[in-house]
Length: 190
Figure 1 (tube, helix red, strand yellow):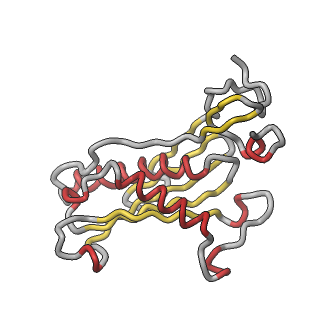
Figure 2: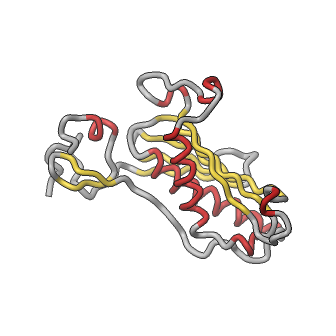
């Protein structure tokens, strides 16, 4: 089955080439530079002792995620949200999506009163950035927690499952996986 209407010659279920570079950032507890075709995202995970005030005394940890498009990540420059003084609704929802996806696979009681910050910075956006951020965020998280086990800071792995994500859409009337930006922006998109 060919992907009529698709950019390039990928079949409807074929992903773009995937490349992972673990430990991309030496100062992070866990990091991965993840590439899917021309979409590139740098994901880091930092484990910090302590939790937000509303979580103190619970014995449970917390995980939060941040997501950002770097200014040169899109054809038209994307202004830094810090310059605008607030995040837009898209960014807030993507951060929530990443955080919820990762919290679904971690036992926060096993983590203890620690906070994990997962940061996903889009270096180049060519479709599927939020899905790639979930996948890369999970890999960075896993690496950070493995370091915690290896150092003795954690007794057991708090992860109880794994998570990855891929975009799905309809192009030219056909369901397809892993949409490139041109597929979502074209008149073929239905």
